[in-house]
Length: 383
Image 1: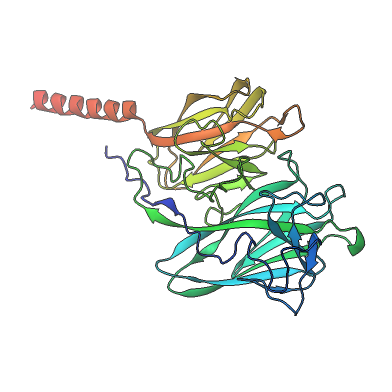
Image 2: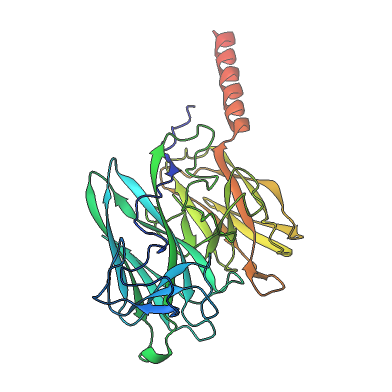
């Protein structure tokens, strides 16, 4: 019996592209701004320009200080009523995915959030809440896939505020800072893994000055997720080896938004009746997050729960789930948290997933081979 070839596809490699956006950290000030200005919030109007960007509505150039904490004590942009900034860039070369990382804060720290940030590009749009639950700083780092372009296409990136209620005087307007835009392209698949991006190495860039990872919100589409080839439920944190414990490689995910949050992918054309092994690492990120983590793992029609106890000091174990291929239909592979965990300071945290590998069971192939030899030997003896 010959094992059907499994869907062959590319994995993705992130290529740093720091020069895609002009003035991504807003450290080049407006043309009419003065460095000795004592105003922490400088309104932008028609009398000045912002290098690399155009703007509309109520937009302010902000300087870090007692009234506003920023990631590097530098400058940022506040988007007020109908405020938006735009930048157009050219997608050169082959078709690639464009992944954006940015920081998001609030102009007024101690108010109830009733505004959000909307990031859009041709054929894509995403909304980000100002509710901060995953860190103890007044800002968060987010990742988002803008889209896929190439061949000299002109792309307009729009970042704007959106009011949730009708009282603009009480709105906590969004503060945007430190954008990083990278491209990712496809490479040949690892021959030892039937999944794409099973090690979570392909995703948005990590900001050098941040040690808190990158938040990825819910995204039901494999082709539109910033975590390449994985859909997201709830919120997960994309973490790196520089600042966290990573079981394998440089990157992993931490499921931070509690029960029902997680990630899922699909694999095509598994052979019906054949056995497959799903291997993965389950652990904690060394971010002071103790507790019992329970993760539900689904592979086709097989579902199994795995529980580890975390001391919050960085550790991981390898697990195995064996299941049977169901034929030509796409086979879902998912990891879902069944627990909600908080640190002593109230920050939400959770289990780390890494090193997800899917391959045909070697025992199954050996049994098939032995059975075939036995049949051939019997035929020879009968003849």
